[in-house]
Image (cartoon, rainbow, N blue to C red; front, side):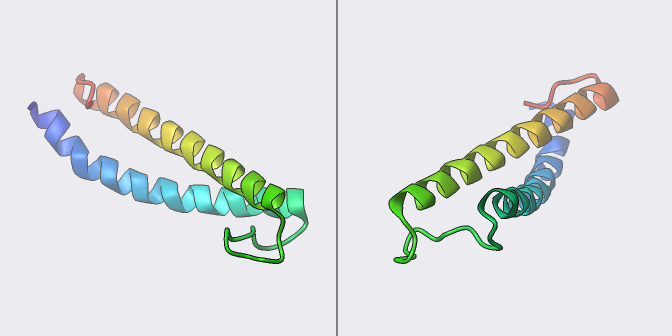
Amino acid sequence: MKAAKIAYKPVGLALGAIGGMLAGAAFKQIWKRLGHEDDAPDATDEDRSWREILIAAALQGAVFAAVKALIDRSGAVATKRLTGTWPA
């Protein structure tokens, strides 16, 4: 494994953690605007409908996947520019 790929591992982990926090904050803001509520429903919330719970889960998954792709791709592009080597 090349040095750039090894060096990228901790950077990738840190970016992933930051991305998770950003995705969580983004989802909360989106849910607040769409649902007019502060918190999205939990799967075990008996006062919420199946529809509402599944919509919240699908939206949350989409937001997390999009943010992860954005962070991963941006980190790889930055690494390529700095080292000349694609990290993955």
